[in-house]
Image (cartoon, rainbow over the protein chains, first blue to last red):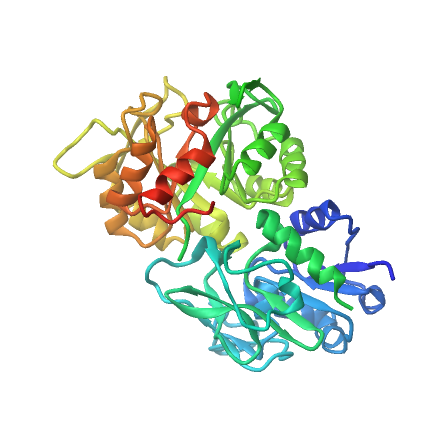
Length: 211
Length: 258
């Protein structure tokens, strides 16, 4: 079966580098917010740059929150896209939305995975920006075929999910956190495979090999 | 543990790299994409492209070359020079850059830092800060404005540490501290200023200006605790090659991505 990948266009993020990274491994991934196209795709990527509240608002406004929840094909959340898979995020809007008295303390997310996303500690530095290594939970998930603890991935984020039951890889910056998660068809990576050189290429290939 | 990053900086004018760059026995002047690819293959952790014409001429960065780089490069890259507004930054980020670096326009209008962070997130917003490495007023240093234009370079009137704290509060995601007098002189990084900035902020800190030997890189990581070291001429001349530099640093116990 040939890969028909869709990058979910949620909010005004920059999808160019992800699309190009797919193209470099021979996958023509279209950027779309069309529910029909997303449902028909063989593989769906939920990218994310920006803030959780705005991204969730964009998904809800377009009804894509329900579309994503109903998918059965492989889904990969990247960076903020991974954080949105959880029930809630501590990354809350600074200002109250129109009509509300106060800004909510947390942002309600997709809830495809149990647990919440918390702010990383201020020390040693915040945000966590740069190349870091990960530890794979054994047996290693198929997303990490051909990869191991010697590989480096590029991270840029200030919030992260705890290393709970669905973590398939851990990383540490101030505290341990989930570098990658998987449950059924739902997958997430906190790092940016599209910016992680050879290791990132391998991970994206592995994702598109999932059925 | 985060790897210490090594960042080659390429000067771009009218869409081409303007200083010759030597790889192994081959000299390349010009093609941005070819150079970017070679540095990435050599183990560069990130690249900075400095548009040296956009800023002094008051022009916006030409995004055609940014798009070409984004198509080919699978490591992060930052564009500096010529970014004076949210619209300028938007064009460069939409073309595929991961970060934008802003220097004099932030000094002229500090609210620009808030606007960029609110619109794109702090992770995209790098603030370049120029200091005179030779000046020393007992641990207090002044930020230099418009250092890209020798005729216009001037004292911004701002204290280095005060400015760093201010941009951190305004939402900057990273600081590049550039020592201007030692820039190109290769006498080593501005250690005193870098150590002072390191103590003043937990933001990622990039040392720039003055690298001449592998020992200069080791020294700035060990003594100043910077997150990254940026250099141009020693990489472009081929005098220091990234794979050898990384082996040298790793042998000194500095964590680098091989």
